[in-house]
Length: 165
Image 1 (cartoon, one colour):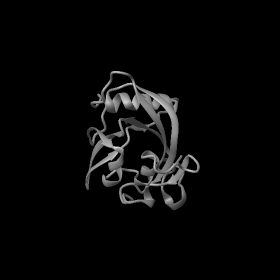
Image 2 (cartoon, one colour):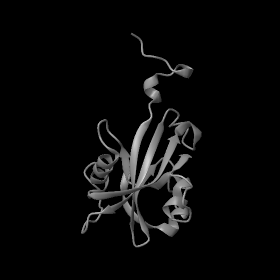
Image 3 (spheres, one colour):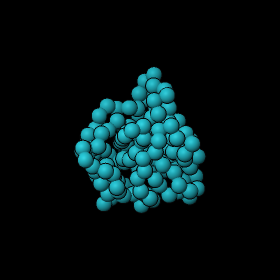
């Protein structure tokens, strides 16, 4: 049996929505970021990644932090949820079929631990960096539209921020 075709002739498998979780880790007015290498230079994102089948968001986030940061975290409150529909944003030529829903949680490091990069870092991950929260808007940080939630200058009316980059 041939694979089902979706609108536009593409395979439905290309149209799956990926679930992901990210950690907002704060220390002394700094936010922990992952430094990434991209085609247009270095940019920063929050640590975290894809949720696996049968894994809770909390378990996925703890696993991702072990892999990317080499530390255990305590998962706290949900800060916001954002979607990223690739065809609507800057990287549309590469992300045309990519659709991700990210849940971002405020997390805490286990006492006495220092993030350094873990055994399962992403391919383009350069390292980890504590960034002054007040400097986020001046850096290449994604998603840019979430910076007001992360720096505390704006509390969302609801936790869902929509399709942002």
